[in-house]
Image: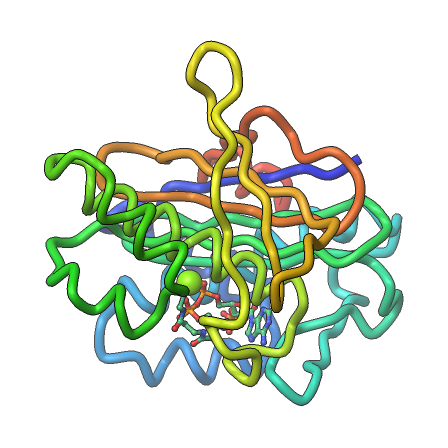
Length: 234
Ligand code: COA
Ligand code: MG
């Protein structure tokens, strides 16, 4: 079963919690956290690994301290003790998202919605995506931009080859279902791919997307609290 978990990061993590979180992650992550200029970056990075360790420990039934990670040539992490265990993490703004489970490649992306110059879409999106974006009502264009952006990134992250895959080589577009719901699908070099997508705002200021090459994506993410994460570690 594929699960998407989301965790909202507070502006200040209580010190006792923070010490526990730091002691849970790898030496490398601790060193990276100490180098961040902004504390919020350290929180996102460390909590992303904590959430990953807690969840993968449950899925693999291995103690979280025994888990270690390596990365492919493009930076996608995998679990050394079970390299086929699908998972992927994303962090932006106030949120961390983790997708895990199933049997095949999965990806997730969360982005903080900030005012943008929509012209940058021309640099990143395919012609069909730009046509779709331009057809949206003016007051929905920024949200649609972030929808497409996170969907595209969730696909790139599922495949795991980073930007070595040109962003305009594939198009992710919706079919409109009954009740106005959108069902997103992707064509790569003009051919339909089997990947399925999830796209939903997390809150007013953050967009979430997920991608899975097989299996059902959940209807909604599971919200994890800082307190419940801490309780798992205690
Ligand atoms: N594939 C999948 N996951 C990857 C990855 C890869 N090649 N490289 C890193 N990751 C994972 C890591 O767990 C990383 O977190 P960590 O370093 O704390 O462990 C996490 O993804 C970061 O994801 P996210 O928070 O969404 O970061 P990002 O949006 O800054 O970067 C990447 C996304 C990692 C895929 C990066 O390759 C990138 O810069 N992509 C291009 C962004 C872009 O131009 N998108 C355009 C969409 S239209
Ligand atoms: Mg991202």
